[in-house]
Amino acid sequence: MIRVEHLSVSYGAVKALQDVSLEATPGLITAVLGANGAGKTTLLRTISGLVAPQSGNILLGDTSLLRTPAENIARMGVAHVPEGRGVIEELTVEENLRLGALASKVNMSEGLEAQYAQFPVLGDRRKMHCATLSGGERQMLAMARALISQPRVLLLDEPSLGLAPLVTAELMKSIRQLCESKNLTVILVEQNAKSALRIAHNAVVLHLGSVVASGDAKTVADDEDLRRYYLGLVEQ
Image (cartoon, rainbow, N blue to C red):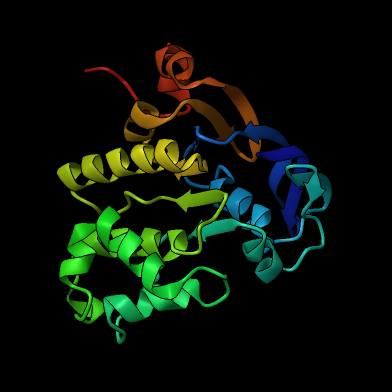
């Protein structure tokens, strides 16, 4: 479980997060929604130790993550898939996956086969350089590279960015299946609110760094004011 308690983060004079609290539990997807500049990416970067907060606390179970180096947070089971996928194009699919397992105690061959079973297209392309992969395949690889270390928590930042609608739908389906089958705690940051709300169990809406709504995903999806003013979901 991840608990964020009264978290505030600033970049100089700019307040990126203000008194943000949320809770994400194993086996459930918590969607973090909002427009560009709402503070979604900053939230994930702070949880994973890449950004230091001004105040508040972040708990993994009963353990505070404050002042813990990012590499140690990763070793504690928090995997972060940043926006933009970030695969190394000059390396093969398998070489990228091996990098994801280096800091963990997972058996390398078993870890690789587990990811090829989860994402068969990666198994088919294991010896291909990542420069040849489609956008959807690169996103699968970025997720597999995080999952190979067998994390307890998976932080996903805009996984659907730049993907075609059909690819996005398949990717979201995979995220839901992974969460439930592996009992993962998933925090999903998405600007594509409609796709995220279809698979999420709970949702938090950020606006200019503050929480303006939180609750189960269906309640958030059904709130017309939230849909119109904060999520940009207006029925035609």
